[in-house]
Image (cartoon, rainbow, N blue to C red):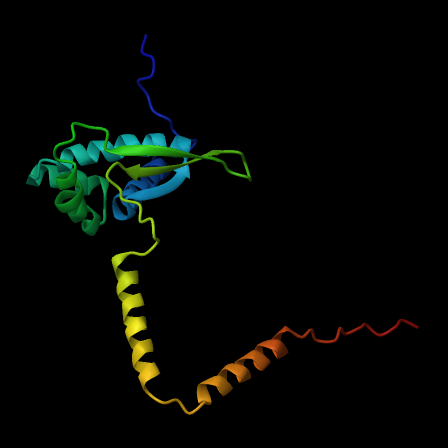
Length: 179
């Protein structure tokens, strides 16, 4: 008997299933972490791991096969130059599934599908955010050194009064009484 040799069609026609695989695998490689249902994650994991295994050997043939599955050349380049190099020594098992619980609307199992070497930023700041925060601190320290004429405070007060006016409810219009 030929048990467990098929795949989960995810209740979709072949064209929409291929499009789903293509977009979700592309998102996985772009963001290195996606949130989805368990059934989709198990299918996407199969596709993603096969592509990572292909990308470990950088050849024209492998690039063409991967490009046939993923249409975004930027993602293909990232897969070959970044992700595959990080997974070079790994014999397999490039992704992990973390269970989150059930979705409120339909009680579907929700999971996070991520690459194994994904680094979660504990503080919540990336390099770009840290640079922006440093630039804001530098601007704030420059502003403290200069004298202000008080216009900034009056602008804040004007903004508060305008916001308060926007929150006030307009009187209700009533329909004329019928005779």
